[in-house]
Length: 416
Image (cartoon, rainbow, N blue to C red; front, side, top):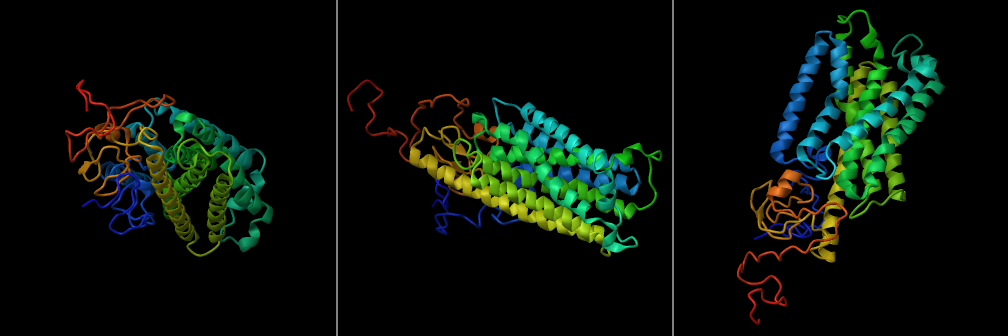
């Protein structure tokens, strides 16, 4: 007996159309579960997700080892670019867009990085250098919170996140408006790539003194630097990426074609800005408390967890509603994102039905599969912008000798 509808993804046993207990991208996970890889890399399978997870964990351990040895230039640079470079490898690995390879996202990465450098230099060096010293310095020094000026707090914890979010959205939104990138997952991908790229280049500017110091190796304050490196490597990068991913995914919207600058987009953009403001305010104000760096790290993790759950809820709704829309409009409407022959699910390896948008056994969405998995599953491959192709009628898995459409004329030349 099937557990999920192969067209709309509804759980047939639980009768739950929203499937809160089963994430459509990886059905073994819950929708509200904190799982980073399947959230920011939705085209991975369980096996490939484990590969990325372990590769990043091992890389993180090596970076922390470099920090413990006092090799801060190496540690900061590697920590800043760990997540964005891993994301570029992921995009190239799953081959999201056959017509537009990973070079498109590399261009997005570099363009957003250039904007990040300009904005960061403007705020940290060119115009607000004195205010930045007030904002970043002080800590629990004599004078307490009074050592940080209120204007500096407004500039770097409120104004800068707004300007930065505009910069992060700029090129990602331009790409999401192209017809070949009309899916919400595409918008999420561009947003995460742009957000993590911005975080990486901003980190390089902020810690530029580390790269220009005369002493390559540092021996003091290693414990504090370990917390800083973890924050830069994981928390900051992923908060920037997930926040921008939410905004650009809302720009893409549900179903075919992008929604554009709708109230939903501006609400998501406001959420992204609010998350960054909350992150910077919390990190800066907690620096005046005992164990302030560690508390700031925990605060950032809480914000990141909320953003991850938000993305998962958005993708769940989008995948289910897009499948219902495709089923209502007919088989040819969604011919790039459903199976046209009998195939095997890349997650559970059970047989899938023809014209399926979901596996009937595990409920995994075909739409979120990688390009390689789609090819192996017998996906219809139609170039972007091309008219619908009249594929051969799928074979009925129960009665293989029967024509799929009883009203269709016989193909053997005889009368029906």
